[in-house]
Length: 232
Image (cartoon, rainbow, N blue to C red):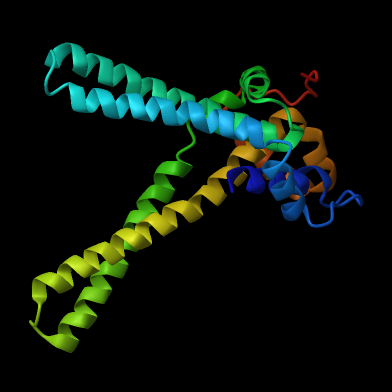
């Protein structure tokens, strides 16, 4: 889903309004992610999975081993996980756009964002935190509303069972909202990468959007470079 969304947003960024629009960009992005780029996506996902397994193993082992050493190791592996997830998410965008292998995509993306000064914007991006908070609120509200409706309908019968059911419902809603928020996150990350790659395209095809982005970026982040970058 992440790579499919990235491919669709990249098609919008580069081609929408240029007269050479791509037909069915979502289908094309899905096919590309399921065939040509599947190996790169699977490799990146495998790295994240291995790190998470190691973190879980350390979390279980620190109860029976030296607590201080295991706690330090757990913190280090957690930091490594966050860094790898950060790099991997932007590498997946590059894979979705250009179809490159995973490792070259990591190098190209990080180099591109750094050279263009977009890395500062990426580091300050709080979209993920805001979307997680919104998902939590949706889960809390949906569970609470369901509980009160059911409580007044059935009064105090099976009160504890009703509360557990509403908590589970709220958790399901929160998970669904967080999954849906991944689409928004993929779109935002793709715009960052595409803007770093070629801001001139956005200025030509969507000048109003380009003006808002450029003024917002340059006013707060003087490191942002607007000159066309060298192709990597």
